[in-house]
Amino acid sequence: MRTLVVYTSQTGFARRYAEWVAERMRADIFDLKDVQKKDMEYFKGYDAIVYAGWCMAGKVVKVNWFLDKASGLKEKKLAVIAVGGSPIDNPDVDVSMKNLMTDEQRQYIKAFYCQGGINYEKMKFGSRLAMKAFVKVLKNSKDEKQREVGNLIDHSYDISDVKYIDPIIAFLEG
Image 1 (cartoon, rainbow, N blue to C red):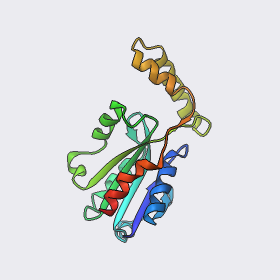
Image 2 (image 1 turned 90 degrees about the vertical axis):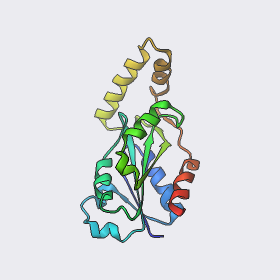
Image 3 (image 1 turned 180 degrees about the horizontal axis):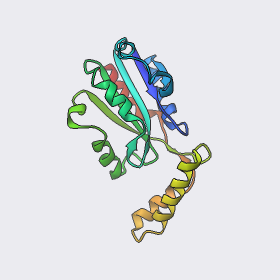
Image 4 (image 1 turned 60 degrees about the vertical axis):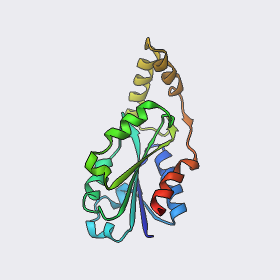
């Protein structure tokens, strides 16, 4: 199966998952900026196309690029990997994943969440500033759960694990 993996990554977590999937699938892998201007004919040469992007404020960065392309590739195996700093069992993940695509898009695109982490050292200045402001709000919350989240995300951490690609590989090979 000829597979393409496209990713965008700010701090490396989405890239890591994209590389793991590409390695297991013996896939071609490209940063989004290297393929975003390619025409549809380029993508039609693949049996499966995977887009991996990082989560920010409950959304997957630049996922609309993939969703727009996918509408013309419905006969392919299509997958989105959302890589975020929240643990996989966080209820907010389910909400974000549900809001990622329309019901129609879910008919031909499968979405997966992979927990990654936060790396403040690699974040762009604006993102780092926004995250630190968000952390402050959470830590000052009256809600204990919110304060716990604030304490988790006030520093860099890595909770990524290659095991989270297993369902993605099963989907692509199945």
